[in-house]
Image: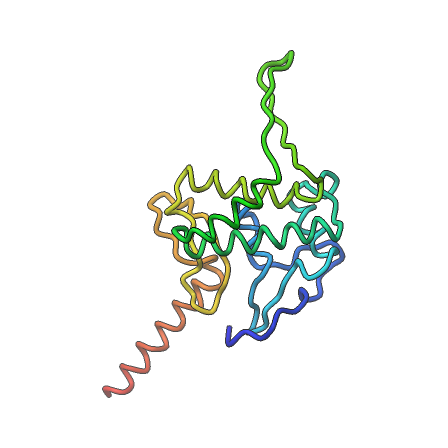
Length: 197
């Protein structure tokens, strides 16, 4: 993958297509994964409202949240807070950052004619997607915090939620980082063997 350069917009993709190498993670981690490195170049899907719209659409949030500049700014704030708390869950400032995002909304629980109902309310509609991502992180922490992982490839910045049976997943994807690690180990073993002969 090489050394990352400054953030750039996403590589060209079909209109409305999500160009990221890892998708389908829980909302909180998927927001973190809107930044990635490809061939040493750092990309950011949230570099503009168009990319933000692609991310929202992928989660069925485009109509509810809207790809407005204010909503993008809120999502960027949530992404920074999530990155800080995932990097160091014990850091008080990181927790405070996430709690500041969470302070923009709440879940309103009611009893309707069909039984219990829940509705997310935010103090400003621009905070909806950001708040949902922050709230999703709380769900992951409640469920299994040790399954929130960064890819073991030092040159990768992606995160995943390990749903493997034995909880030993190390790579964002076996097809990408996992295969590169295997190839690198094989190359090193071959070089050592050749050096002894």
